[in-house]
Length: 328
Image 1 (tube, helix red, strand yellow):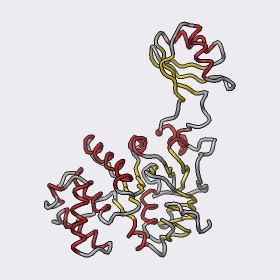
Image 2 (cartoon, one colour):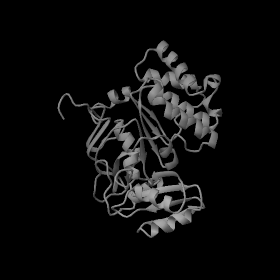
Image 3 (spheres, one colour):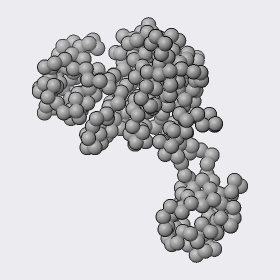
Image 4 (cartoon, one colour):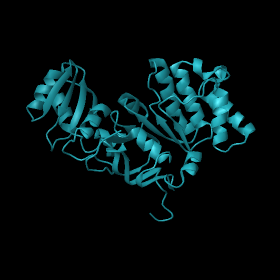
């Protein structure tokens, strides 16, 4: 990389972490960039271990760089510029939200007065201004998640690592947390790495994804690349203003494969050489109007299962590593 080329948010080369005989990260290679990046994988895939390695909290073999800095030798500098919301609770008994966030800000190097000001601002942003002086021990699960978010934000980081931020939340609290996450890149000026096993959250808020499985990265790229949005314009969802089976029969006669999904809608796989012109022509012939037509894409869940299921076609969009390994 030349001096004028911007370093990616995260760059991994041969990243390996072992716990005894368990290989948690197995020679991981990747360049990761994006606005809100979903870090996906089953439980035990290595997601939390990767985040800890990137923060310089655990030793490892290979190379891991965050914002161009080495996690093995510049962990403190990385933590000055990165916020971390852990999956597990990390509170001191009896401590209030203001005390916790002020303490976190001081740990990042801010003087006491500024640390307290930042703490109040972060708690206001997280929606806890009215409860900020109460002991965290008595908080609900949703409030505890918001406190963890506030302490991760208190020093205005350039990247936020969020480890399972919606775990255990009721539907309203989960929705509120996702709204905060969507809002942060614009309002707070930071990129987000969202580690989760909840695929609907990723589909809702992320523009990029990293998929891990058994200590390896299987996919890096945009959500559109993951879902196969490119090069599949013969696979369509179609809605008409009448009995869709008439159009299905007409297209089937032209070599298309049609699956009726409702009285007025169907999915269609056109012949390889065909275009949407065939659909409109067939609709005119049977006296129907096409109300809607769109390229059919996999859901994030289906794409995720394809990637970790060792599909025969390699993932698109980025680097991934190969080789045996366990997980943690």
